[in-house]
Image (cartoon, rainbow, N blue to C red; front, side, top):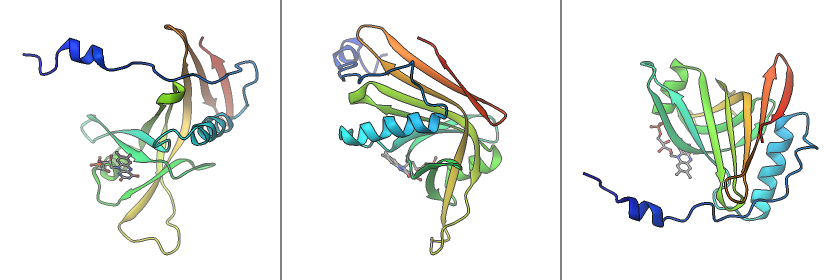
Length: 170
Ligand SMILES: Cc1cc2nc3c(=O)[nH]c(=O)nc-3n(C[C@H](O)[C@H](O)[C@H](O)COP(=O)(O)O)c2cc1C
């Protein structure tokens, strides 16, 4: 039994946004810079909840989990977010210190996905005891931009040692 008909699903609009200019010949060396420019444009264009990102974690049985959290910072520590110390995501990150993040800025047809190791950040002064900040230190970042029809551009950054390399996947 289908809870939802294909007809209803097909009524949901797809790819209704407009992709901005993207020059894949002039990519910055560090993906943090490209992320910053994409985020800044999302804010400028008033994309709703631009800081919201899906956070995927793995529990101790190897079973994946995902939920939405808000980005707090992007710096040398990686991509940071805050959460309750006793939360499921905190427990899962303590068990398996790896995570994936995914942003989707729908009106711009842009998405970013991040994979990396997660670590607990030192607490800022005056922060409440039940609060934690986790940072995901990226080793892979993919920038995806939809185009007209089925065309999409993917820019993949991978880190080897301390060096980032970028590849345009077309
Ligand atoms: C837009 C949005 C932003 C959210 N931001 C956070 C956040 O920054 N930190 C957080 O712990 N939960 C946030 N949540 C709630 C989580 O998605 C989740 O429901 C909650 O943290 C429990 O997750 P857990 O059981 O896996 O720990 C947000 C939810 C939404 C929809």
